[in-house]
Length: 251
Image (cartoon, rainbow, N blue to C red; front, top):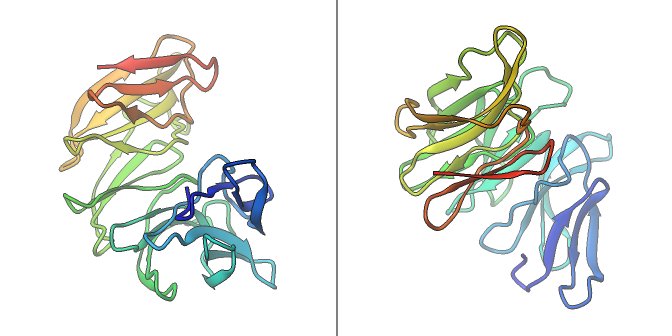
């Protein structure tokens, strides 16, 4: 939601703001590239919208828009996939997945002018990183079963975790990681094990070192490879099976 109460969203065509009283369009901006329409563009503390647009050379640019009117504030040549905004308005963008380079990265961007604070080569997908600013940790999930923890101040990689027991090239992790109140991290992976059986598992890891706290296998036939876990007010983890629509509550 925008500072003025408008509803900010994105679809396959662009980024838009709607009047919540009647659903009419206040403004819309063409925003394309390797973005997922169901990933809501984040806003900074000033109500600016972080999204991506094409420039005149038809290249994808990370773009900051005025949330009230959709006017461009700045844009920079970063093939943005998704982003999270820190408490100081630093923009942390997953970048280059689906772009012209086979190498992906996480980029920290200065909100004032779009300049790069740091850039780290790491496996990312078109979903936002999870920021634990209290403990100085950032988590990013790649599409093939790798979760990485970085220092959000420097971009230095602290540890990474690969889905265990998965047959080569079978792991799919296309959701986003989620942090609970204890600073631990949860994500969902779908993968095949010996015998060709496909599993979907929720992994709970220590945020500090990536050690496994718990793993929970979803029922046979579940396919939660695009799921993003959510923690409710009592600490229960909620996961939706994107294949059947079944929702699971995990203690």
